Length: 371
Image (cartoon, rainbow, N blue to C red; front, side, top):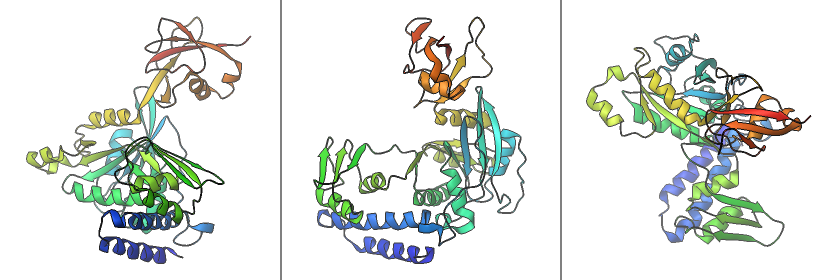
């Protein structure tokens, strides 16, 4: 099927879902329809054999540099290029007409000793996930980012926010969500077994079996440690979802009234700015750093002071001494004997630790090699 046929099929299933009454008796049927939509959307994102619908969703060819990648996403003419220019000093063409930026423009911000790569992506339009307006390339590149900065026009932010979220969700991105705590393991025999460590209010055994049947899962073990919805269960089976933190940047706040700004203040994960007048750019940068969720670790060669100007920046999820060594050089861990640590993670200063020791922000580390 080509992209047009797939979209038509998705529309038919969505119409059927709208007609179906939602109750316990139709729960399994609704799960089956949602699973069918998820499978069809996967074909849109990654067509089999690389054919149909404009090809596979490959991103822009931009080398990844720095400690984290920040993607500027939004509709055309909301001020993404202005924001990149004032924050990184990188020239990105700015004009009063739409689609000024036609490719991905990278820039570098230095903050708290870290190098953050900021990407100005072309404007998203409705239907981007289906390939309209280079949409697939934009969203494929957005999937590789550590943080998404969704730039919205403060005059009509919530309409744009809902549309962009819909496009990103259709491409397998989950904004400001955590992966559902479900363990999934395929087996050769034994049927579908479900272990509930938490009460399931959205899923029934029939719904789970109906979704598994659609994916041709005959034997598997599922352990639920959360009250998962149908969509979250399908996300686990699909296995290609990307969970990314997102900041909703309300740009051009100089063009709205104070009462409107107070209403926007109720939106979660938001940051008001004015790119032209350079209002609250420091606040945005601090929020981006917070959402990157990284720690800085300083090196200390033997007999010298720590290098305070060039920290090793690690993601908070992987901040062991081993990860620190691998970040400096992949062969360093082979000759690792122990490390001396000063800082919040040390019980006493210095503390002698092994490669599995978990580091904290602004720790100082000295590596001792085997002789």
